[in-house]
Amino acid sequence: MRTTWLCGVVLLVCGVVWGQTAGSPSGTPQAGPATLEIDLTKPGAKSSPTLYGIMTEEINFSYDGGLYAELIRNRTLNDDPKGPVHWAGLGETALSIDTTTGPSAALPLSLKISSASGMMGAQNEGFWGIPVRGHTSYKASFYGKADGATGAVTLSLVNDATGKVAASAAVVGLRKEWKQYGVVLKTGALETTANNHFVISFARPGTAWVSLVSLFPPTYKDRVNGMRPDLMELLAGMHPTFLRFPGGNYLEGDHIPERYEWKKTIGALVDRPTHPSPWKYHSSDGVGLLEFLNWCEDLKMQPVLAVYAGYSMRQEHVAPGADLEPYVQDALDEIEYVTGPATSKWGAVRAQNGHPKPFALTYVEVGNEDFFDKSKSYDGRFAQYQAAIKKRYPNLKLIATTRVKGTTPDLIDDHYYKKAEEFYNDVRHYDKTSRDGSKIFVGEWATREGAPTPNFNAALGDSAWMTGMERNSDVILMHGYAPLLVNVNPGGMQWKTDLIGYDALRSYGSPSYYAQVMFAGKHGDEIPVTTLESANNRLFCSVTRDSGSGKLYVKVVNASANPQNVELKIRGANVRAEGILTTMTAESTTATNTIGDPKKIVPFTMRVANGGREMMQVFGGYSVNVLELDAK
Ligand code: AHR
Image (cartoon, rainbow, N blue to C red; front, side):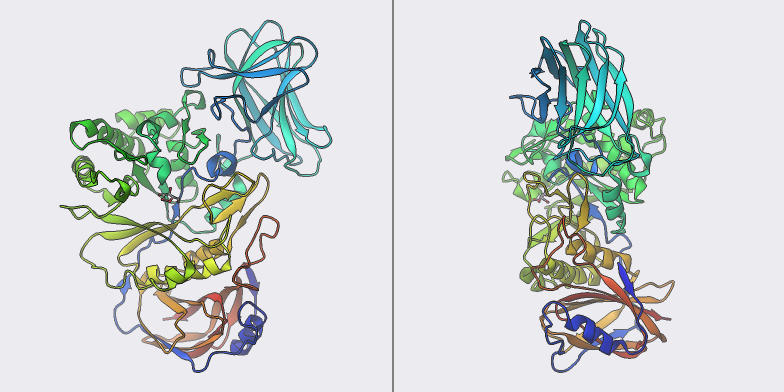
């Protein structure tokens, strides 16, 4: 965020700043100020400390070709049964998928590389290129075997345009049995580019097989099998308190055998069979259950664990009762893997996988969007999971994915994908929700305007909707924007309008991303009683207060074209004159950030000096604002 330190009467200054920006060409405030009364003499409701979090799944190349730092595409040859896509032979080398030999029972396929004479080798194009940076170490490894003496194997990073080798290292000749080999590739001084490929070449022609070919750059917090640092840093900037995983549709799969089977995603990569995802590309399962949990640990988020609940998206379901029992048991095992001591059966497996310490877990979600199940089996399925999980883990809070007959789940997961206008008309959605029933998890929501990432109008819709969620954050315990990530290369996107975009080298936050950053970063634990009067019908507000520090966070979204004067009247506290105003606006509502212009729209912060118990503040046309005041 840019910070501008402005002293003096900010009313005027803001008018000038906003006068230059979107939708407020004249900078003339609408007639008559609105009044926002904040009454701190009355007890406010408690706001959920876990309100802001992240929803994630494998979609839009979120992990493979995204957050997961692996740079080799189709490393286990599962992407396309028709041939070794994303691989090419060097010279006259012939490449094929060999279905008769692989490095493990889980990975029965391999890349067969053969050449009768001359050069022999294969190259991988990565996920729309392989990013190579100067003075950097890359860990390269593969499983391989050879039929005869193909000699030393050289692994290299090669520039597509110049053919120049950025780094290379060799291993001794392959044996007749499968074995893993590894080297470190170190680059020297060079210009950073994603226009590179990875080469595996052999000293002599013949026949060799490779699989699980892997190339890792440095990862976030140096995790082995870890995540891309730039994306993790963007996520950390959202101040997320939880991670909902593994989906979404990705949890369910199109068909029951294609569901997310957590037991097949743990342990050594060579023992993970990988699986087809409903988003039309194959998942490497490099981000398996433990990687999700490590991700939580690294960003200090609590896991919101979604367990498969017997429904897959092509209207396939498992009938409640005996048929469902193995699936329920699988969920109990999964919870034990996450939370059990290292002495428990599945806790011991977790310890063996490298994490002896149990993870804290409060929320378990049973399924995903089960209102799509036309057989209406969810009432029975949920009841069965609820009985089994609560019996063994009475303190866990269960999230149902739709209303359930015969029981009041701890939480219900509601999803909203709308246009900005629809969100404006629905900001009061939860104002009258019963405070005695299930709590709410808005587990997926987004204003779907703009692609691949949202435009500024979407950020306005999102922000308006967030004011409604904040005002009701005594009953809405958590919410998460979806989808979170998109690879912006052609073919990378399966779902339009995603919060964060990237290619192999670069990444950026959309205006909606910055709205999340602004809102989540300044969020109190109390919701004071407020009254807004005489505002334009596109002005949305929420106010929270930090009971410890007395900080008051006033969020104002002006989704109309004209600036709006707001008279703030704060009762029951002394308010310091100095405050901090963070604001985001744009040259037009369709303006947006892109991979080439990643910071066109970002919030900027200025100091205001006209605060006090009664103050007048102007909020620019088409703007998102967070005003921070000291109110003790
Ligand atoms: O966020 C994209 C998809 O939308 C999710 O996978 C699914 O739960 C919802 O329908």
